Length: 228
Image (tube, rainbow, N blue to C red):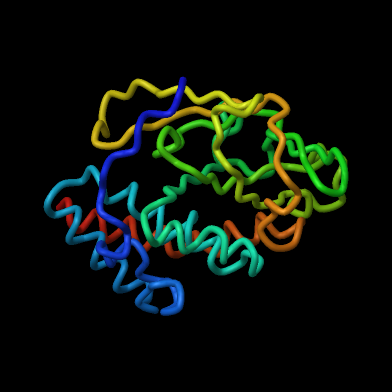
């Protein structure tokens, strides 16, 4: 599936909530999870469609993981384009055979050299993948049963989603509900990415994900209040 054309949505900085947590120099408001939860509640009161997608894009995993743990070069190249609306970002851990069980992941980033990895595997239930420029991706580097500590072979990556590059395929999923936003599965077949895609230390991906779990719970509570 080729990516659909991006909509002419206004830049993110005009939608203050999209960059609520970011520092001022990135165009953010330096506010916290309480403010983000109130914003999500308000969005959900007018319709549930965008509330969950917004939290994934900006306030939980995608933008925040990169902004908090990314290298300076990654931040300078990527975050301003997220803030401006030029880039959209998606995030994924889940896989068809293991769900969100991070200690059973199968999608692997094999090191080709000191400068690149090849990603092999499949991710599922990815919101916005068909219009995203970047994906925040949790993978393994070696089989988990070969690691002394399974969590130590789980890097977090920020990769380009380029359907014109060999090794990447996106498929839109048919859903019974949640039609306001599209959900996708992504297939990697020796998809080449630079080693500079690593977000921080190679063995800290699991820790980075846990760092955002509490925020997700708060935002989901805000969404539920809005829907109620």
